[in-house]
Length: 116
Image (cartoon, rainbow, N blue to C red; front, side, top):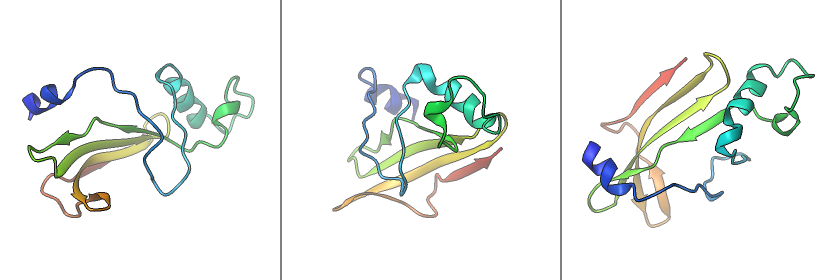
């Protein structure tokens, strides 16, 4: 598995707004991630400096680089949501390719979840 990861990473990853999560989202530049999490965690403090751009955020979602099987019909993806401090959840999920795109494989052999 580790060699599969190394073989697929060919350079820096540039995320684009092309995923649908069923709700609106914004891409946060890496230097601003910690500030966004702090703003979410302390959102009850309306005077927290610099949090205006994060006013409507409830959590920050992190996605791993997908790891594909040899024929690229399945992908393993780690997803994490952080809502500040010890608040968050995530897991590892398997997606399979369909004629319409990628679909979550329910009750997969590799599926796991965690909650904080």
